[in-house]
Every structure is written in C-alpha cells, then in structure tokens.
Image 1 (tube, rainbow, N blue to C red):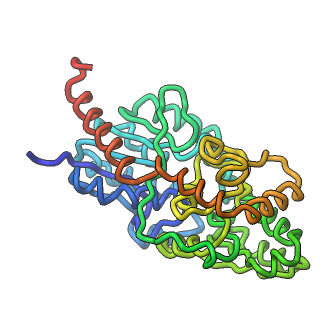
Image 2 (image 1 turned 90 degrees about the horizontal axis):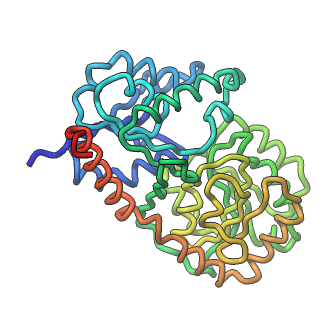
Image 3 (image 1 turned 90 degrees about the vertical axis):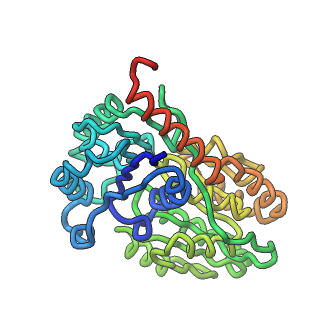
Length: 348
C-alpha cells in the first residue's frame, strides 16, 4: 500500500533552523518518514539569506509562486502561520500546529511588526476555519488539543558532580528578558558565581546590548555567549550545566524546558504560556510570576543548589510526556484519521 504523501512547510531545512520550532519538526522527522512519503517545502538558500525583508513575507511569496506544487500532497503539515495561510486557499487538506498563544507580530524583530498584528489575527482566523487538523504546543485552546514537544537525542545524563554552571538557551530578543537573567546572576553570592559560569546560547537582535550589560556589571563569575548552536550541540552543552534559567514574558511551551527535563536539569522560569502545566515550584524547579523581584529569583537558584539531587531526579521524571516516539505516533494517527475524514466526509 502506497504511503500518504505528506508535505511539510518549513521556511528553512530542519538542519539549518534555530530556535524551539526547528527541533520540534526535526525530532518528529524520522517517525513521520516511516509512516508517510515526506517532502519538505523550504526556502532556497538565496532567499533564506535575505535579511532586510521579513522572512515570513518572503516565504509567503515563495509558496504563492509554487502554488501548483502544493496540490501534489494528500495533506500538508505546517507550523508556520504564513505558510498555512497560503495553503488555506487551496484544496489540499492542511494540519496546523500552533507554537504559541499570542500573535507572532507582538514579538517581531522589525519595528513595524506591531502594525501588522491585526493582519496576523485575521490570518489565524482563516487557518482555524480551514485546517482539518489542529494542535497547539501552548495552552489548549477551545477545540484545539495540546501536542507535547517531541524530544529525541542520544546525549547521556551527566553525573551531578560533573555539572557546573547555569544556561539560558533561546532567541536573544526582548521578550526573553535575558538582561534580567544576567542581572540576577550578578546578584548571586560570590561563591556561587565563582563555582558556576552563566552560559547564554542563541542569537538575536539583543546580543550586542547583552554583552555590553554583562561587561558593565560587577560579576565575580563569568558570562559566556555560546552563539547559535546546532540542536545536538546545544543539548550536549545543557547536559553539563546545573540549572536552565528562563524569564520570558511570552512563550507557548519552550522546547528548552522539555530538553532540560530529558537531561535531569531543574528549571527556573516565569509563569507564561503552558509552562505551569509541567514546571512545579519546589519539585522540578521554580515558577515565578511575570513580575518578580530579583531576590526571589536568587533565592530559587540557591534552593535548587541546596537540594539538587531531589530537583534533578524530579526533573527527569517530568520528561516522560515528551518522548518523541509517543508524540509522533499520536500525531501520525491523527493525520491518517484527518485524511480519511476529508476523503469521506459523509462518514464523520
């Protein structure tokens, strides 16, 4: 029996992308390929490397120009709203995965992005009305069930004695509040700073200002910027650290937290998106309100370090829902049902 033809929309190859969305698809990829005849529709390098035009706009134009190619699939799986919007005007059934419960234009790195929030809201409404299957990585929406971040890697959990330092991983943009993390690190007791370096992994528009901030503060330890790492290299870095530190204003559910749990790393984070469903204060880390005092955060770091074995074990216990094989099998079943239902609407 021939496999269903599955088209996957991604603005770049899964090996080139960075951020939480890239490993989401990459970790699903081997399981999807076993079940379906998979084709990725991505931007060619010459278009991907254009930086003065928003990539969302370039990708929309690219898909529109290749309209006929989108018709050659039994279903198109997308996790990029601009791609799903273009597909929604065709006859090919579409499955869409939402990665956040907020308008992506609210965190645009372009100054004029905020003026297009209403446009993206309209695009999302159309996606919801046209998709035959929808899932969300963030908090469940009415009629849109949750899908967990799939985690799959070969990195071993390191002995506690071999772990040193704290790490943030993600885009270096304003909503991530990495500046707060650096300031909090500078307020830790000297002994903790001297024992634990702060590592910052990622890239973004705030990188230069964050380096300036780190240089301007009286820090007894060290702040190391790791740059943009391949996901497998980032996971290896994570495995050698003590705690994942986050302070975002907006998230769905960060891939970084699921990856940290898979390595038995406790997490300290702000309460945004669906993080509170998995991160429990005093169990696998600490959850702070969006408006918090730096001293609260410092106290949380000290509490984790003082009872690290307990927090580490509980972090690993929290990893179970994110195993990629289980997440992918559920998605594969849902895709098969959606295609069958679309082909035989009278049976629904």
